[in-house]
Image 1 (cartoon, one colour):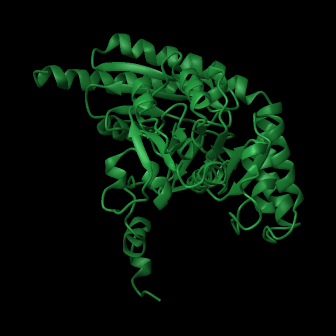
Image 2 (cartoon, one colour):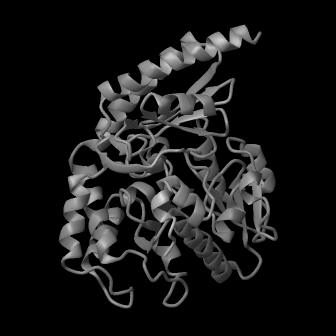
Amino acid sequence: MDSNREKLTTMQRADRYMFQTYGRFPVTLVRGEGCRVWDENGKEYLDFVGGIAVCALGHSSSVVTDALQEQSRTLVHVSNLFYTKPQIDVAELLVKNSFADRVFFSNSGAEANEAAIKLARHYAREKYGESRFTIISMENSFHGRTMATLSATGQDKVRKGFDPLLPGFRFVPFNDLPSIQSALDETVCAIMMEPIQGEGGVVCPKPGYLQNVRKLCKEKDVLLIFDEVQVGMGRTGKLFAHEHFGVTPHIMTLAKALGNGLPVGAMLATEELSKAFGPGTHASTFGGTPLVTAVCKAVLESLLADGWIEHCRNVGAYFKSRLEALREKYSFVREVRGYGLILGMELDLPGGPVVNACMDKGFLINCTQERVLRFIPPLIVQEQEVDQLVDTLDEILKECGSRNVEGGR
């Protein structure tokens, strides 16, 4: 045992013993309740990151803890060599509330996307032979950190240093239909995209874009894969983001809020596609364990029955209107965009200092693409909590504006 352990702070111990793959903030969080978390020094924060769109029902939700405790006393894990009831219950709920006919469970969003990539290619091979394997993906997309999902991710900063990546991916700009048309050749088996790009900066589709992509897929007999890992499960004010646009995919992936913090992912697909995945073609030892899916069932039932999706839609509209007021007030706020409670505020200046200033004042927010402040709080957030954040953000932006003027901007 390390004799110096007691002399090190929590963060020093982490820096000594753990891989340094995360740019962590200098805060150690030890407790959460609702939309609030506390650090080891007792400081309270209003959380508008929500575990990166994960904690839809908030921290330490009784919905989650009750299901977790009950199931942990009954059955935790037996592997997918056997049927387990909680897994079947969640699959049935997902199918009955979506376009899909079948569900495959994994441990994460990246693994759900990996399954989607494999399913698309396997289906195309069975139907067309070896000629169709290319997947068109979007620039600035994010689909995960496995080698396949990294290969499908359209951000060089994420892909850098891992060559050679998996071949067979082609990137086009999001919201650019002619680019997709140009990229569609006889080798393409699928188009993979987030209906709203989260890590890409809360970029929303232009009117008619997704509808025309779906039309192209039908004309060319190409599959459409929607990655709803971040924007699904009520985040946008509908259970699934694609419902806003009246477009259904052939394959959809979910994770994050599905388990409200427990590791889970799910790939949903139509009956026809599911036949391409027979016994032995794909598997996951921990995919959809009884423990995890018992929580997923409780979370999904709460989202559907307790009014949280409608609440998200209403509070999200209020939140967006308050952010729009800041846009009108400050010339360096370029745009406010998003649906429900995934909102982005794009600035003409770096967002990192704003994030840090908010943290100092007891608010956790996030920045993507260097200049887009992203707000993805628990879906249970209240208007008065939104007011607290926006009022504080107003003060911080006012200071930013003063510095810009003094700096000659």
